[in-house]
View 1 (cartoon, rainbow, N blue to C red):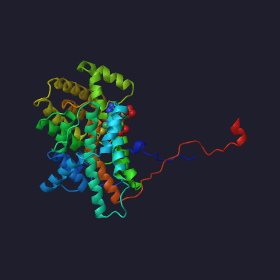
View 2: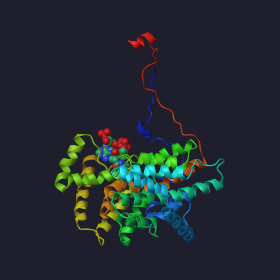
View 3: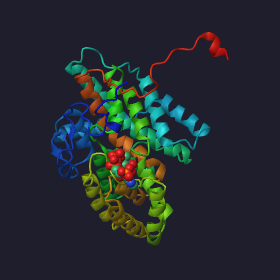
View 4: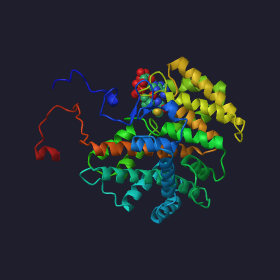
Length: 388
Ligand code: COA
């Protein structure tokens, strides 16, 4: 057997696997042509609308869209709530990512989502876009209800507020300041979309078979759960907790490197000179921890984070990715670790569903090839020998 002179790129690194009009990373991060620096001055709703519909909303469109997300979040089917209640008793310590994965799958079954009607007309795209909007609102509601159920809190009605303020209030069970809601909203904008990352590619692959939006999102949530992808933001806080004090940074990193283990929240497959989202959120984080209502103890965590960052750059030449500041923002907002990656899901539902709809609109089955590296062709043993 002759070896392929150009072996396939491991992890498809550097491979262009398709086209998209949703997001580009060339030069800087842009959603539908707008830079991320500009988009963070708006709201998550504005960004989700842009991702799904291709253009920024006018004020009336934005209000109507915000209201539709609120309506979806307020309207979780009874069966879904019963299922969460049963699961909260049977497996209260289950990963919240599993809860969202199962919840979205169940919502698909309840909605009898059998995939797009063919041919894909403008009406069908609008129907899928409305399904996407429902999923964004319902994803947030699934998360809030689960946290209520597993912390013995009485679920309260979904607040009539923009999604960031409403979700943060539901997770905290108390009113939140405007500064806290804005910082949280910024994390949702930054997490909303990122081109052909692993979970989005998983969603597009499922969609390419003609399958339905809920199945594609279920697969995407499974992919996002992994620590090399979305799960990194939870691990960041665990790292900072393990290290504890600035004096421990050097020995902790030395141990980690000796064991050839990565440090979560650093490095990126595409950004080799630093992640623009991490820079933007680091500024937000710095402002947030100095704002009203944030305990002063967070300043110590920030000093620790600065020391790790400086050492990672000096020793490995690696800069932080978005998960590094995001974990610290969520911690400063008083959120428990287990909701960090699920919040990423709520935000990324907008990007995933935009990609699913784009794939539906111009579909060809995603089916790459592999390079075989197993045993040479060999004879199948006669039955007598198999018995020996
Ligand atoms: N900590 C320590 N070393 C790291 C590292 C990290 N966070 N990220 C990359 N490296 C090392 C790699 O081990 C590799 O070392 P080697 O050449 O000795 O084998 C080298 O840097 C180059 O890695 P690279 O090829 O650029 O990584 P990748 O593109 O395959 O992987 C990630 C990208 C994101 C999976 C990787 O950086 C990582 O695991 N980061 C931590 C998880 C994380 O934060 N994920 C969220 C991403 S948004």
